[in-house]
Image (cartoon, rainbow, N blue to C red; front, side, top):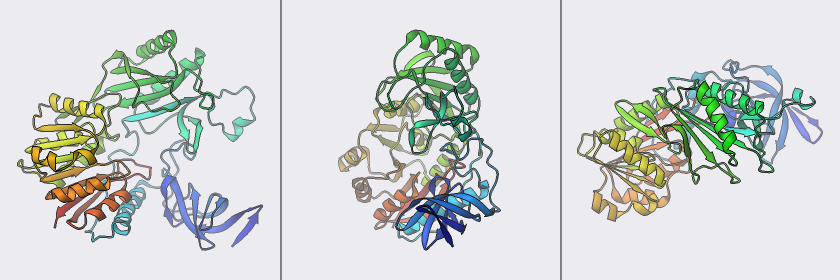
Length: 467
């Protein structure tokens, strides 16, 4: 049933049966799919439609007739407004079950290949305070609650996360459950100092203001890096804010800053300068040490990263005589992790700064059997390279969400390694690539890994063997 509400209908007593991305529940009404915010499978709700298309609706709940038995009370006060942790209202055991199902369905539907039984998804050891990196945004146009909108002389400065779909609105975060202390304390101290000293927060619309971004990185051994991004230089104010914070947080390892006057927040082309301490922090995995600089990529869930890398190493099943290629090697963390069980590891990465980190990580761990090459993988990975450095016995690939270029999959097929270990944060593009490899390779194992609790994101590791 449904009744009209102006142009947009109200859908009555819709049963939510599944989950979609961004924390949306999925139901069906009028033979159309319905995507509804913050609903959980098992809920029965009336939905106010906010978007009507030929084959689907989008909306939000206005009345609950029945609450799902897998629904839980969110622990964060910002749930539903902040863009993160969108599945926080679902019990964790069900969250990871949905992720496991998503991986299998994508591999089956998109890959269109024969699959073995999927291994049970590996749950994250921590479901709160698990991240080692967060980036916050300063804004002079923070998101206002309905109660705040009509108030006069209200402070509109905020430091937090962007509202999904609203580039110029930021949720002022009181407490974030993603990163352990001193993250929250540092963020709140910076905001308090800025307000007390009338330091301007960034205005996205007119591109004006002093304070722009705050990045906090931590490691499992207690090291902390703080990067403050300013829109323009004000040496006196910059020194004052750093000196204030250093007194409050003497345990911080690295204090760094950036002057970014561009129209976007990307720091890849910006110079990061050291204010105090070291220009890197150190993470450990097993007996290995990894230097992490301000631009270094490192998996953001340190405890689960160790489990993920062990799975990769187990799938590779190295005996010490193999030549291993590690595509999209980043800072060489996987390459260095498997090096001691390999004859040689060749890592390839298109970001030049990452290759510097990869070589340094080999150096500090006394690893001498790695070679790191910088450039576009589809251009570097070719027969000339194989003839010079050896054909791969085992190939590990961990591409970005877009997956691998077809030229790369073609080269892999031609080089014919005995085993491929494919690591992906996007099982849909992973399935597409595996379909391209199907002519010569058979999927042997599938292991989903939950790196990001309370979100729809899931990592997946697939072992393929040459037919």
